[in-house]
Length: 407
Image (cartoon, rainbow, N blue to C red; front, side):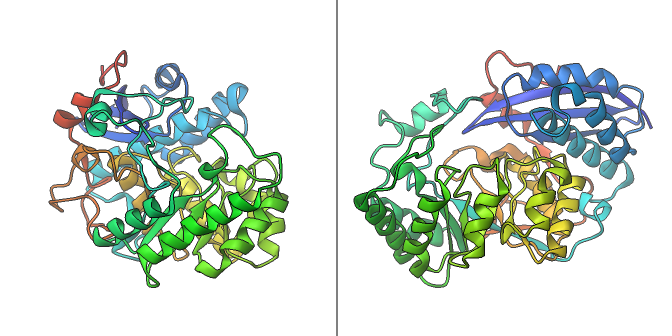
């Protein structure tokens, strides 16, 4: 079996969903998804010629080859791994379909039949769309959804957190996450001053409202998006400790694992981090020094499905749990679910598209009709590959202007 053709397509959703499709000479193809990045489609087109004529069954060999060939642009980190992660998932999908085997089988087999999902609730309102540099945009679908309202209207109020939590419990989720950094600092900025008492009180009030709306039986988490210095993060952790959080996510910038390790060592609340790291090598210090309680690789950019499995196993050896970051389409979410199904230390997988009106419709699963997520879980079956196909009739309606569509 040889690779004959590769192509991309991009859907403009809450983020860019960048799909990679790899065709083989047996008439089969596989589809994977990359985490967004500036210039990603162009980078993929530069990489594709290296794949033509290779045996797609040599998934790990190809991934390592691409790591080295792209070393000048990203030896140990960078957008290179966004591209390779999507290619690697497409290869697994192709090989799985060709052999009639689900991807989870290649990763060692399932230890569970369904994957628990936690829903990202942001700060109460999640109807939004961001470009590759995290600047707000308004594609046609978003304008229709907002119906004349501005994005992020009336966020960061306790009532919004309460209502959103209650809504998600009614939708069947028993784990959810809320943003608290946005209460005081904007995307792309860090807080380089002490938090005021009023800011601390507002954070606590919003989380208290979310806990009240969710109830005591639901797992509740909060995200800080790397905005705070350790001293301020410790103050926040202590203020939120009464609300029994499943984890406290990314309180400090990701450049230095010692910052989150300092907070974790205090034992106030479990710490989760890792979405900005690549490959096992990027996670090594964080995991081996027990710098967190839960590790959160993003499977669309950490190096691929097999590399995520390795990261999860490395974490397991240090008593660290596995809860991947995930802002992808349902196709990328399915790829992540295949990894999660194989790891004993898995806790929950993120779902970030609850307010994208077409999210559930972007894939087709012949073996599991209906919604992708059912009562806060994704069921896995013996369907080959990723067990799903991109619904191109729906997806093309939301294609990003200026991008090719699997040409």
